[in-house]
Image (cartoon, rainbow, N blue to C red; front, side, top):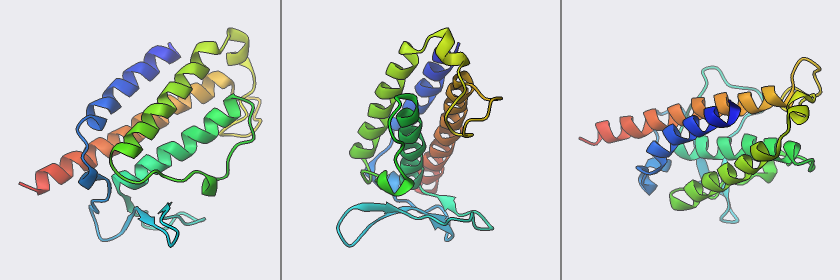
Length: 168
C-alpha cells in the first residue's frame, strides 16, 4: 500500500515537474518569500530561519525543491543507516533541469529503500522524523514521506499554475 501511495503521489508530482521551466524556480510570488540564491562561492543557498517567522514566507519553487531534497535526503540517510546530513550539508542544485534531475534521483533512491523493506523492517521503530518514538514505526516514516511529498508537490503545482496565469 505504501508503494502504491508513493507511486500515485509521484505521478501527480511528475505532472508538474514535466511542465516546469527554469524561470518557474526563482519566480517570487510575493514580496515576503523564501527562495534559493547564489552564495559568494557560486553555490545555491536556501533562505532559512531557525525559528519559523510569522508570517511564514511564501516559498519559491526553487526553495520548495531544496526543501524536498533536504528532508528526503535525510530520510534516506536514516533508512540506509548512514549518518544523516545536516540541513546545511544539503545544497540545492539550483534552478531548472538540475533540480528536477536531483528530485528524480531521490525518487529512485527512495524506491530502492521501499522495495527492500520487509514487514519486520516496517514494524521497527522509526529513526526519523520523530526521533526514536516507540509510537512511530518505519511504516509511519514511509507514510510521512508520502504525505510530505504530496504537500510539497501541491505547493509546487500551485505556484507553477499561478505563475502561468499571471503571465497572461
